[in-house]
Each structure stands twice: as structure tokens, then as C-alpha cells.
Length: 116
Image 1 (tube, rainbow, N blue to C red):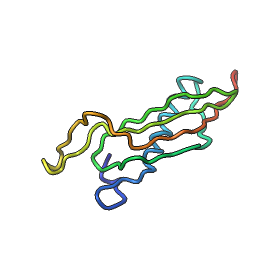
Image 2: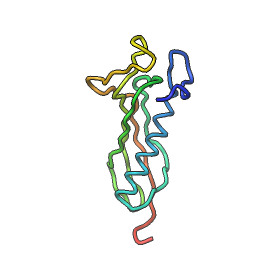
Image 3: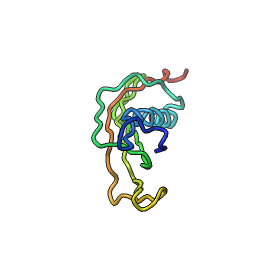
């Protein structure tokens, strides 16, 4: 997480940054399942459960939860897997023993009809 994304004191990154990552993993999932990037229709639920800080290394995943005729339900999770440790030096970091879930969400994407 680059320091350029810090929006608040304490090196806190705007929670919406995770939503951008979710859009990227939704696109990848749609390409794998439907051969098309799809269009994000909206979120049903978003939970910001822990802070994202400058220097964090984040993983985001999307899981297919529902298949409609043209829509796909997805669940998302963003986890911090490494966190900076500036007290040890300006570029020091550590791998977390357990990833820290920072954001969860559910949403819907729309894909073209089959054969289009």
C-alpha cells in the first residue's frame, strides 16, 4: 500500500481502496468464468472490519456465490498479509502469522448473454 494513498492521520488508508481491488478481482473472475470482463452492478453489503495502513501488503479475493442468466453473485475479502514495521527502519516489514481481514463485501456483476 503506497504512502500516496494515505488519507488520514496515523497512515490510515481510505477503506474504499479495497473496493477498487474488489473490482479488479471481479473482472478476473468474470474473464475466467464467462470470457468477458463483465460490468459491476453494485454492492449488497460492505464491511470495513480493520484498518488498512500505508506499507500494508494486501490480498483480495472474489468467490462466485450465485449464477444467474446474466448476473453473478460474488463475495469478496481483502486481507493484510504483511505490515510495515517503521520502528525497525523505513522499509522494514513483517509477514503476519495470520492474514488480517480488513474488508468484506458482497456484490453483483452482469455479463453478456451466452453466445454474444
